[in-house]
Length: 276
Image (cartoon, one colour):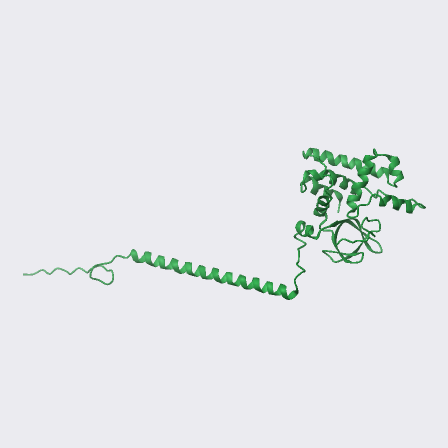
């Protein structure tokens, strides 16, 4: 899915607070360019060691953010990039995209304020855009797509790969099909975030109760619902009977009664007789 789809969600629709947009703007800019790290032949180990200095264990997205912030602190230096095996041309492109996003945000009159070190909030915002590309832990180092059940694995270049702990739920930016299905640019998320941000796909199940307990709870809920329906039906029937009684009493009051007669009627006139 194109990166600018997430730009529209983050900026145009303003689904996140304005104080987070500065960090998200950098992350989106980093995702819009090819790989920023390179591994020259013969110096693979030095390149991997340099990359590890920037890695944030919870997120590759936050790792990208860390790289940009370190580059900024070093005055956007090309020498610094060469020392850390980072493509200077890619980083300059990131800076250009970041400026373009800033212009869009200025047009939308959105204030740019940094969120400080609120990393969990940033991860939740990332989850709000990637919840449809989520995976859950199945085994040691193996994940399955939550929606499709397709097996997928962490890419060896991921910050989460080989760190000794695998989070239960993650979201990923893209899936690379090689010998295995590898997830690139991964962020660890909370399972409750997926249920909150993607309720059309996910829901929370209580695993602390046994099957018999859940069955009993379902039967009790069904019985309570049937009792409620019965009370509602009885109430409707009682109201209907009361309404019929009121209508009958109203009709009876409108009847015209004639004295001396059991039923209302018009008295007959006796014809007059004439003669001598």
